[in-house]
Image (cartoon, rainbow, N blue to C red; front, side):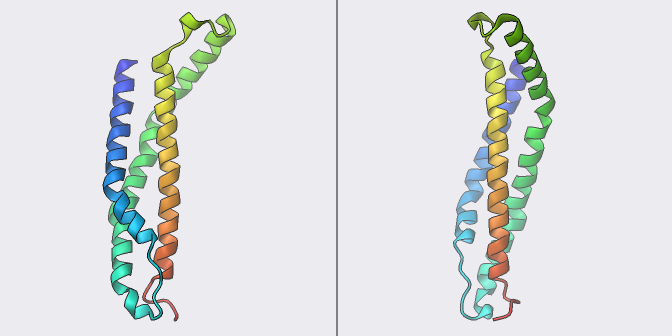
Length: 136
């Protein structure tokens, strides 16, 4: 169990560090507003599109894959916990901190994935609004 705990913790740390590196650019891109004339948005469009394609999308793909790798282990832990709970009805000596931590970290990874999806679709909406090829 400690190897799984170490792996999932390391992957969460790496993913959050990568998220921290790109968040400033994502936030700047999300705050972009369309200019009066579409031609004036070329630089902003390029910046936002680059942020989406080269930073946010790869991280989103990684963040979808990582928690899915640990779903089978999480299911195993949940099954074992249900059986233990039925047999011993929450007796403290059968509580497993490592099981709880693995489930919690997997939950955190899913939350981060959903947040990245929200940012991804928000940024796509911004890119569409500042596209220099839009009708003015």
